[in-house]
Length: 43
Image (cartoon, rainbow, N blue to C red; front, side, top):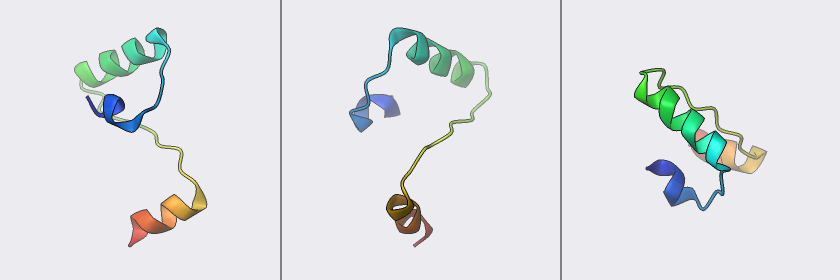
């Protein structure tokens, strides 16, 4: 899973909510990035 690759530590409740949402076909993930990261994504 992508979360495991980020090094982000999720509480179990958050992980279950994300997995449930993706499993139900919601397919939406909101990313919080810094201004520098956002500029890199735009390139």
